[in-house]
Image (tube, rainbow, N blue to C red; front, side):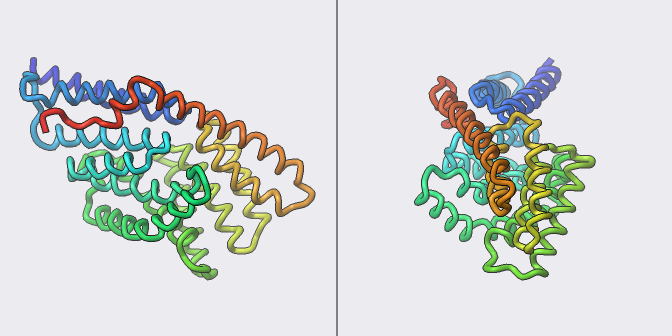
Length: 309
């Protein structure tokens, strides 16, 4: 029946979304692209007027938005930030309930772009863009969350995801964008990060977010002037990220750890080991990106729009 077909399509879309996310976390971007093509085909088939089981209203809109968000994360990992931001804008336009997720992802991308830049000029441009746009985007996300957008999809996990990430983003505004934050601001940022870590460790169960927050706690303690405590958190982040197989995330965590280790002359060998591992992880991520961009699916994913729009 039409209803059964819609249910199967919805389940397939969800499973493909999970598959894409898992492949990205395992640094298998080529397989992630394949899963995304499956998501695109699923939504195209269900939403086309001649499909015989067209979904109208919120369900169809959420399906479109979920594809755009998943594509954005993939393109972000492939270093195509502008294309990723365009898909996040399309997601926010497609579905009211997806606006919060798309806005949080946009802010996260803006903060992360400088670290992923290919050269110093690109990194500086990314920092300037983050300084201009990120605070406004974080406030937009906060307003959407306050308005109850996280509950619109009916999924408790989406609310927890938003709560944790909003705390991380607010902390990032202090750590990355504030001009010489004082001790009170840094303590506030530390509190936000500890709350986010509690959510990520608890009901949300999000190991990549746990590693990211631990690394940011290390940066917070460093700005507070406690290098020993900063190093403890950086080492925790390294241990957590090392278990995940996400070379992109691990190389970012290792960069912070390496900077901290260099502050301790007696840990020079550990700093060198961190550099060696980081170089290997970054190389693996770059190879995965190159392979994905060269695949037949990449341009399909990058250019996807609903065909009947």
